[in-house]
Length: 417
Image (cartoon, rainbow, N blue to C red; front, side, top):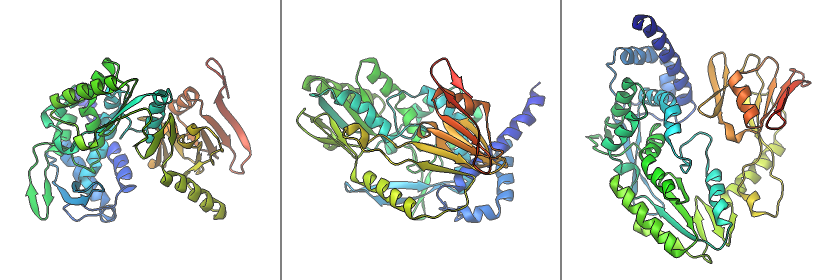
């Protein structure tokens, strides 16, 4: 039986590596220590993908060190960032897709960073559920050098507890221990995850799974975005209690809070979290977000008619509202699928649009309120089910624009097709 299953397993691996390559190609074009950019890799992609697949199948693959360099931080000091080779980024993307269903189920609802379908807006909304019950006390803190101080032994224990295949565990461990080349000198690491790495955000969230669970277990209304933590409490005593508990639990994971970024705010004090300003039970969006929306409106008004792409994302303008809630809620988003033969499916809480087996775009489900398909475009059964569950309206049109049909959920027990 095992001999019959093995060829199919490797066929699936090969297909998923090609999907991972498409995702890598859409992101940073930078080269790793081998000097091969995404464009150069694309010129020899068939040869490179065959080699990568052969090494993975024979279990002879070895991760290359990342190219390390320093970036200045706004708060002062420097941050060490690394860029993996394109080959390694492809495997990292494949690993992320392969382990994410189990990983996402293991994460708590208080973690909002590095997760498809989650955003800063959702984190702010969660804060406002408690903060608008003014007056309240707020604990705001930050984990010191979070990515750099992650203990590999603890992290790999969490990875193994996901119940994924042993070969995937080994490949994840290889990526962690690949090391880094900084100014032409190889540096062997013994802790931390690569800042800027494909896997790093997901693994960092997984590392704090037990910390998040403990906070929820004792009733702390924690909101965590990466290493930024915020707790809203009813009293100064409650905020100090939260601070003591969080510090103790982090120390058990070989982490600590950053004293200079740890503050407790009284009910009459304003504070900023994830760029949003909170004061007197209200919240204001950052200025850059408001300018981005206004710039998008001006750009869309100037642009003329252009032929549609296989898929595009169009956001409707925000309606004016006197309520502070309107400042930070995301505008409605429509996913247009226009090319004949395009296919929409769902994976890891994202709508993925394929054309001739090539991934064209991937959009978190929570950012889509409408889907419009033109011509012979198709939705998978999973996509239809998710649309009904989340009340996402789907409209199917002829190539000329006339409507063929639609699908929407009317209430809990009825749908309209």
